[in-house]
Image (cartoon, rainbow over all chains, first blue to last red; front, side, top):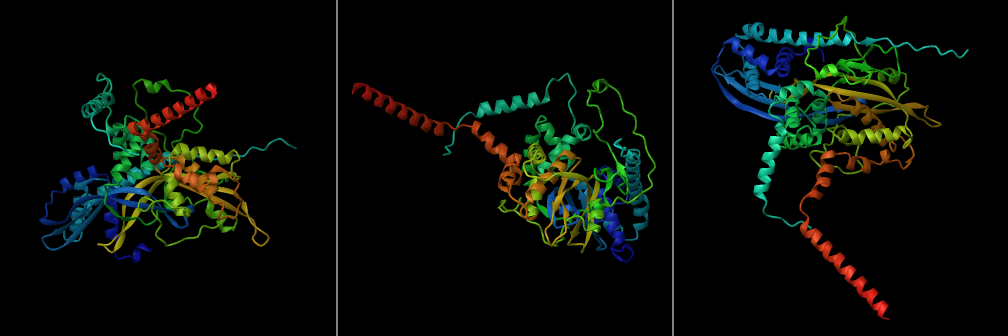
Length: 151
Length: 362
């Protein structure tokens, strides 16, 4: 899908980032944000499973690979803005914080949340990925096939 | 026949208390933390996630601790926990093409576009015990290389472009799920792959090895083996669009096997596929070989009578939790069953003795 034409691209981006970030990082940055918006919990944090699917031969028909744990929660701010959180693992606070961040990102607080919570999470994730990629790159090899002296 | 037994409650409680003490081991040795297992016994954690069929490294590490390192017992604990989880839905199939590869090798093309990346592998180690690990000591960071990001397309896509490999038809169908309905035969490929990916590693390894030794003729090349992280996406009804709900590490193995073809169809390579949670490459390679062997019917091959071609044999005996449940139940009280067998054998012996005595008298 063309990201530019997807009206939900930004929201997809922060929801995915919150889902994949370590719960401890989200908790630390959420506390540091020091915003306590009045809200009601629409869906209390719930731990469940999602069946992860793969494709036969990487490109063919889908098959069930196995489940992963996911926790979800939904909140409503006092102004009526609804936020949803779906996060990997079994972190109830993580899911609730993700839902609150999702809601706040639709309000005037978006700028502060972006700068002080999402940006550091994104930086940390990119750094972690870059560190692994650099170690992988150091193990890149060139195999040479040797000519066997048969002539 | 099953007949309940009563009693023994105190003995059972005491046995479990002793189990807990033995699990802890010598108290002068520091207790093992779940995080230590997750970080330092990662391949055991990966196996428990793959065969437990639940991706959650913390839970798998806890299960390993609880099971005292008995991985099949740990897998049992994870399978039991899994059944308590409400199912939120199914993911969009993961795109292994977009994997951030920790490891990616091809045994068929040395100049694979995107390069060959060894990753943190046991390959090329000397398999000599490293006594330094028995002593205290920290490990320095691994060397880093230049990370110009290059795409790593599937090697198979190059063969596919030339029409040299049998194609994999795409489908939007929701795959059958053996955790929701009992496995019935003949199983489609989706069910076979689900069954193989959670199957016992040892069993699948043995089956795969048997195909290499000639039981079912399907010499395999590893076209590509890749290990790394992929995002998992799911449609969220309340949002109305799909989001990433996490990221998992998987191992994928694609094999190229010998041809099919006919007078009208030009010869084409065939393929086997392995995809397993975690860094689990022995299992993924084994899975690809067994997947290929089980495809004999759809590829128009002969039934050579090989065990690895026998869907019923492979699929019904590869699940270590089913197997261990049935195997281990025979150690539990069977007193009434055995009592009837005892009575029967005594009766047979009495009759035989009577016959001998009678023949002697005549």
